[in-house]
Amino acid sequence: MDFKSYLLSFKPHVVHTSFAEKLRSGLAGGIANLLLTLALHYLPQTGFQLLIVTSMAASATLLYATPHSPLAQPWNLVGGHLVAAVAGLVCGLLIPDPTLAAGAAVGSSILLMQLLNCLHPPSAATALMMVLANSPFHDMGWHWAMLIVAANVGISLLLALAINNLLPGRSYPMPPPHALPPPPPKPAPFITLEPTDLEWALEQMDSVIDVSEEDLAEIYQLALQRAQTRIESEPA
Figure 1 (cartoon, rainbow, N blue to C red):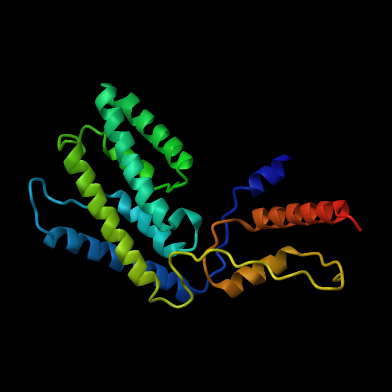
Figure 2 (figure 1 turned 180 degrees about the horizontal axis):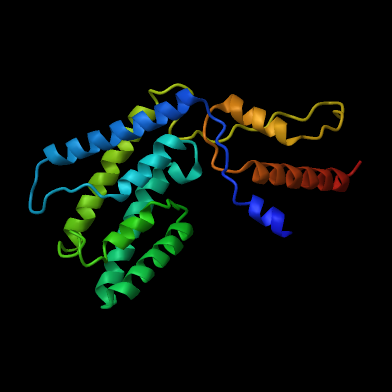
């Protein structure tokens, strides 16, 4: 990659969604966090107060701006935060130095989330919160800390299920992919996709797709190569 191409790689990634969809995402995220705060406030308080976990705001960005992203699906939300909370608590107990514990908590939470197929980026902040000396979760004990995280995650999931499915063009959780239609009986003419074709398709979907146009083009080319290899290897 030459220097000019390297600099161009820093350009902003354009999100091909309408203003109405952007507005819906912002309103949905704000309303969801408001309802989450109210729910935690009015739930029965026993022992420590049910606080809002600040990483829920980052989760709301994924849940309402990219609801169809694999990183925003229910298992990623629930499993990611709970796994990260456990990782943070364990690192805080085993590593006396808070600086080392913070790094270990974030790193181990990322590893565990990937191993358990529940990668959810905001969850790393949950792990970090568990080891910070000034965090309200630090002196609560593991059972109260886990209860508060679980309450935040459970309410956030219920809100995401309700709000996203009330908005047009959204289906949450994302349904499994449909089976591909059978190939046409006659070979279709070879078609080459241009970047403008991908941009147009993304605009028609009017939803944030958690992948860049460049990655989509590369996926398409790799799939074509794989299909060509498969067809050539099939017996006549």
